[in-house]
Length: 108
Length: 116
Image (cartoon, rainbow over all chains, first blue to last red; front, top):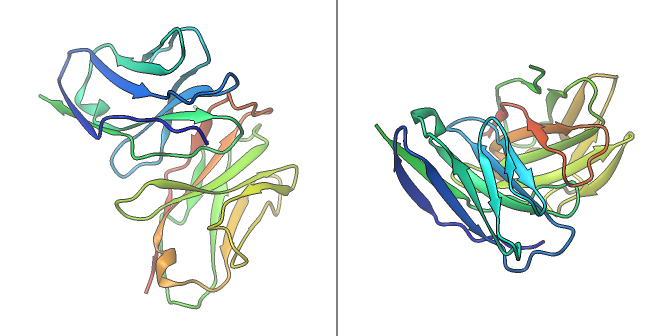
């Protein structure tokens, strides 16, 4: 499975935008880029996914580099509820292989 | 909003006993999964299930584990003879009609299994 690299942890202030980076230099043409998050004591939760173009939904935006070797998850206005572990995952089939993710701390 | 449910939320069992963890996936979903997360570690894929058969399983999913869809709504994970190292949070997930690696999976809240 293609590997992703994320920072172990990040901090952001409440009500400010957050940019969570992910490197995936070995991505193949058929890999989708998915982001999930796991709030404390909860199951993982889908955030967003994309293939080549940037994507927006009600939760976040996903910016994908032109060469697809990196991507950035953007939370436009972080709230305390966004404190979680964020996973950047490349999917080639229907199983999800989770890495360690980025633990996002939100400062009030 | 439809959601995946799991029961029980916490199960305590003695080593060597059989346990069955239950899940009710989202009603129109056809792909089902089990994952586990040992305390403080990564979420690990166990098995995927489609059309009443296992489509893929990990190395963790050995002969002690089995899955079943006994009726039109439930999806179960059975561990035949539990070991201490089976203590973990077990998550069920389901996904939409045709998972072509671009469809999201919906996860349940998990069952915490404690083996003593």
